[in-house]
Figure 1 (cartoon, helix red, strand yellow):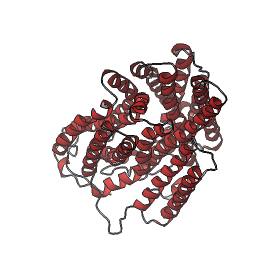
Figure 2 (spheres, one colour):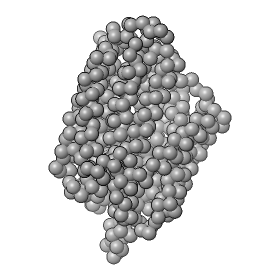
Figure 3 (cartoon, helix red, strand yellow):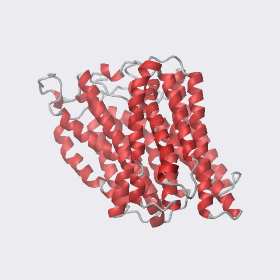
Figure 4 (cartoon, one colour):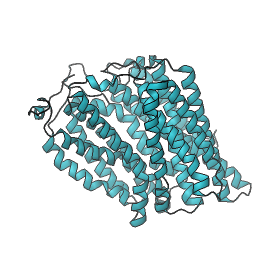
Length: 497
């Protein structure tokens, strides 16, 4: 795989092949990545206001989050392949246009359907833009040390976007309306569209005669996941044996089974099935489903608890998430330090179990819970241990891969995380709503019933994390904690996703 990048021929003092404006491009791409990931989390604090403004049901509200992560996760690998074939700059600019238009649709939404459509489109935009953005960084920074620094800056700003989303959402909704959490994307998109074409030339993979895109695999897998999530959410309002639940679940199962058939027969599958022959990679991708199911459901339901039960304003609720970001950052530092010393398996397993303990502490809340005594202890424990798993889990996801497949491995892990968040919301929110509904039918006041539903969901999430920790401890192969960074040997090559 080679790159066509005539804009990268200017000499540099450090490296004659380095792009002379690469740091400016990095700043622009990092800002774009920050904005895109921000929109995955920025809606959380505004969820109660969006629900009131558009008339969402309790289960329907989950689609504001699930629509985004399902589209982004389901199409991420296809987005990486499209960038390889049609050009990274072209795909990136296309993704920015789609993101701007879909953000405008979300901000102007007058119905639940319009909001959900906009969120799905935002997820598609991320699937198009994110792999192309990362691929451009890998191409522009030809020196391994510079590339590592650039990817660190890019990843740090992306992580910061995930944390600051809660705070920015609280501030914007408090000062204006929830609609501005979407409209604020428009000027950023315009800046990228105006400046990026002036800074970087096109780059793409040279086409092969038999090169084909596995569009069928992407469509069947994404549609199958959407159908499964829809069926699970229907169970919040209908009996498990009803047609409203069984039919979409069955359709989703059939589509996912069709995905396996398509991937077996495809000449260029999105994910070759033999990729999962490595036990450690398979286990970490499975338990990533558990991790994100617990994580996304935790932030979703705790936000509703704070605003619906405890009466927090959107601003207070947004600021209340700051300790989580600090705790995750602390945990990432601890995990990075401990992994070379005690190993990937020990750090990842302990991180999962510790995060589960944090959720158990959170499950002690009641309608009179205080922030310092009821919410904060579990948040700190959860954040530190969850953060500690992140660098070790990434190492495990890259276990045994070649340089050529490092992008595929990273893309598969990201996909599983997105899918895990959507499935976790569907399952845990459904369990919480059914539990609350049963309690209310027995005369329990709504606030107490809903709190009991959240508590049960937190405990199920904790159980998933502990189970993940046990599976890691039992099934991981011996992983070298000093695994080389696969990007260090990538020259004029981009990850597949």
